[in-house]
Amino acid sequence: MGKAKIGIVTVSDRASAGVYEDLSGKAIIDTLNDYLTSEWEPVYEVIPDERDVIEATLIRMADEDGCSLVVTTGGTGPAKRDVTPEATEAVCDRMMPGFGELMRQVSLQYVPTAILSRQTAGLRADTLIVNLPGKPKSIRECLDAVFPAIPYCIDLMEGPYLECNEAVIKPFRPKK
Image (cartoon, rainbow, N blue to C red; front, side, top):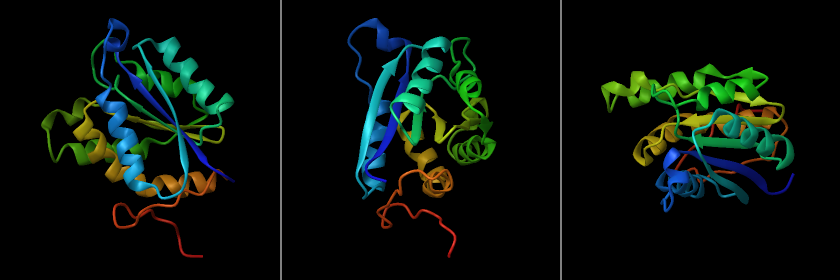
């Protein structure tokens, strides 16, 4: 199947305000580099909190760029401009609510405001799209919780086989 393409999308109004260091997108890349031993290629973008831009980016990464996984960060809170979950739902064929449920459950162990988070996940054809919170520490906590299911989900969608550093993260795949 070859090298996996993984989309990384940072949603932030600060991105369009000039010089901006994207710590959240880098946290996702660093975490995936820790997890994965198989070759993968990031398809990375920083975009503003605008629903049409988010939708177009997710569609392009899934349909044209061939990403088997797209991970977003930002835009999942209750602020009026936080529309990443709505954009994700609009472009997905089927939703995967367990991802958001587990991420909130894990985050509640650290902060009581985790109930304000609206991250979700869904499937667009052969692509899994997962919304993460915007803080780098929360990104790692949430990915540590949900990533064990991601390689098997991608297997079921006949995507690239993701091999992991099992000393860091142990993916779950049923015994054959």
